[in-house]
Image (cartoon, rainbow, N blue to C red; front, side, top):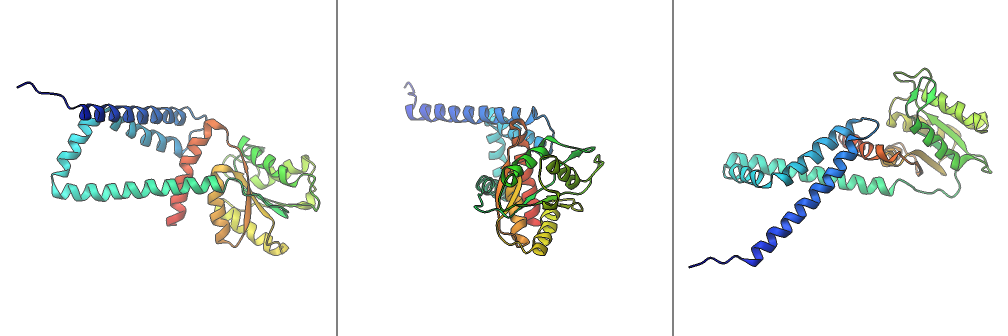
Length: 265
């Protein structure tokens, strides 16, 4: 008796193939984006590992599911798979949570700014990096020509390859742009985002400023800065410098790692 094909089965198989192809193509685009990033960061390796794994599963679907089926048949391995799957699901959920908050915190306007906190970034010798310049220019959007005048707190110590502190590089830049030296306070002892915020909070307390505060950093970095600000009693808005598109994915992925570390730290 001749066998007849099941139209429903064929349709499901076709839909499955289309979905896998779309996922593989999107992952491939993201993989290329992370690889061609002009500045290699930890996010580059996260992107290569993550997107590469997704593509591999899509391409080698049948061997992958045969292996899963075999492992599932062994009780001890099944338990390990359940634990591993739970961990992966939790991590994925946290990444979604981080991403939503990173987007929300990228821009939080303040009607009457009294002080801006400009978070530090790399200095090359005595020259601010492109990213640090973008942060300073974003801060100028807020402070330039404002009446009453806005206090500018520039944060960042001196790191490897830096001939001056990040705070000093910013202080010079703002003076060159016409900001009064009396309005600039250089916090030049911090070496991390948390220390930037902690030391800035002490300066604000000394000046009696508790509102009208704006955090200035890149969009991917704002949420982590906000979490530290809340920890040290700073209620702040946010104004973001825009990251160069080729760099954005890698810094975004690296920021996930920073947020996980902050969560468990």
